[in-house]
Length: 332
Ligand code: NAD
Image (cartoon, rainbow, N blue to C red; front, side, top):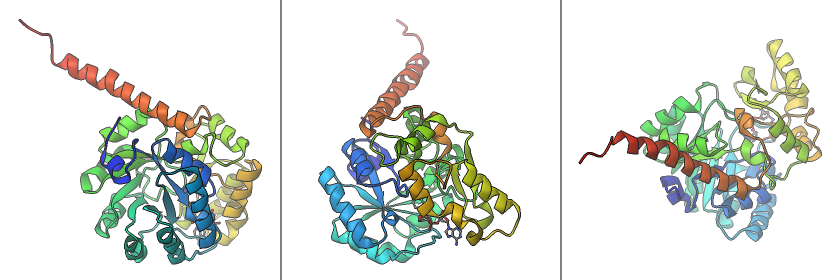
């Protein structure tokens, strides 16, 4: 059992979070993660309107008696949502945890907090993490350059970002980007984090509600198979390299590309169809470098049992042995 400020904050047994995955963090996945002792977040923007999110929250309650969270992402989007109404649904439905991401949630923090909700903000730099702490966020997830989705524009890896964030912040820090196993969990704790956040790893689990081809693709591809798109728009996204991505890179490479030029390839609705139908050549699939560490499709419980067992083994075998041998031989 590993107890940290994050297990205390979320009242969970394991310091493992499933962050919001567009179209994937539905009730099936999130309930499986919380039932296995972690914290999961249903992604609000997956739903066309707040009432559909309410229905999903209620569906998730039927799958677990435990608390779970909602992800609210503030990034440029083709379908600007009514954030306040999404927040009100969370409050009305008794949600205790919200993961904000993308842009600082200052404009919404009072509304969220009026519902007594604990906020963890996911960001990609120490300066953004400090801002999140200053406006009242209770914890921060820090996304290293390895991460899937939007890893920011600074290109600093988790190995550097996590200790810098841990040093700079009073609130608990969750390490994200490149984490997929128990070794990563121990490393994150060693770097000063209070837990890990995983996205790509959770997309390749039995409960992830996506086509089997998507899961197989994550298993079969390696850490070398991601690309960064939308750099030229200042909205970098790390994704699985496929023909759609190569087309986007070609358009961006011509110079002066606009979002309109690439909409047919990057639209979330095309990505949604890919996840449902399994044609991994068409659309954008967010994927992190941690793909190289994914070799199977376990249930969330199997995965999290394995992560905790491996973490405990690493601590026992590497650290305790080193500490014992450093004491030197017993003398009479
Ligand atoms: P979408 O169809 O609205 O947009 C497709 C992609 O284009 C997204 O990556 C979006 O950020 C980007 N985009 C849209 N308008 C843009 C603009 N004017 N300038 C630059 N980039 C622009 O996306 P979606 O799949 O329906 O997702 C909705 C929102 O939720 C998006 O902002 C998405 O990035 C975000 N989200 C991201 C993550 C993650 O980091 N993995 C998770 C959940 C949600």
